[in-house]
Structure formats: C-alpha cells, structure tokens
Length: 173
Image 1: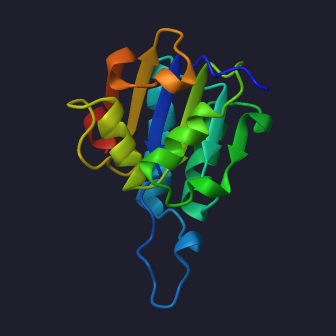
Image 2: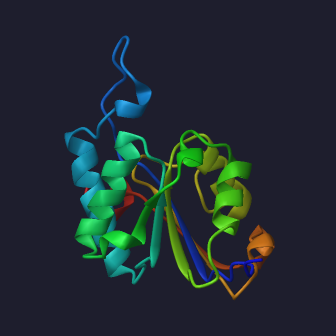
C-alpha cells in the first residue's frame, strides 16, 4: 500500500489558448494557436520568476494540454521524465482531478496539473475561494502552498498561501 501524498505545493494550470473548434473536427486534436504558444512560454517564465518549479507535471493527453505542458517543460529545462499524461484528466470534473492529485507518490512535493475547464476552475475555486477567478483564464495558473498535509487534507483551510497568475496580469499579454 502506498503512502499518502505529502504535497507542499500544487499548481493548477489551464491549457493555453487553442484554435477554435472546427465543424466535424475532434476536440482532443485542437492545437494551441499563436497566442497560446506565446502565453504558454510566458507562463513558464512566470513560474521560474516565482520559484515555482514542479518536480512532476501531469497533463491531460489532449493536444492543447500536451502542447502547454511541453512548453512548460522546455522553458523550465526539466527532464522529460517529469511529464506524465493521464487519460482521466481529459475534460475531468473537479472530483476526478483531486483524486488524481491525491494518488501521486509521496516523493512529489510540487505537482503541476495541466487541464481543462470547467473541472479545473471548479477545483481551483473550491481549494482557494476568493483567489482564483470563477473561470481560470487560458494559461492561467493557481498555485497553492500547503504545510506538509496528506493528500486527503488538500482543502482550502489547509492552504498556507494561494496565488493566481495569468498572462494578462503579468504584463506579457
């Protein structure tokens, strides 16, 4: 039986801006548009500037989340092994995202989850009411710092610090 996760930090990142859905096209195959590619790189710069370097990146396998996660990985010069994809994160509800977070191994101290709305925004709002906007912006990130809590205790009353970042607020956009 694995030990419960003792996360110190969780960052929830909505994928960067993607191309509009095409008639008859697959939602999973939507790619980042030009703005999304820029925003993903700028969000990576923001993470570096704020010392928010994850030791694990977990993303939905949809193309737009994959591209966002890979941009973060590249810009942070992290090893490829840090990045993992989880099929259950594709358009996941808040409860499912939280379950995936809680399933992380005990050695993960800072987990970055790259996902989709509305589930990601619902989880962010539940974990940091009043800090995260109702709908996370594309490439918007909510980072939560905990004080060595077990995965089952990732509740808003155990958050030591919460900060929301979006490309528009950073002055890059």
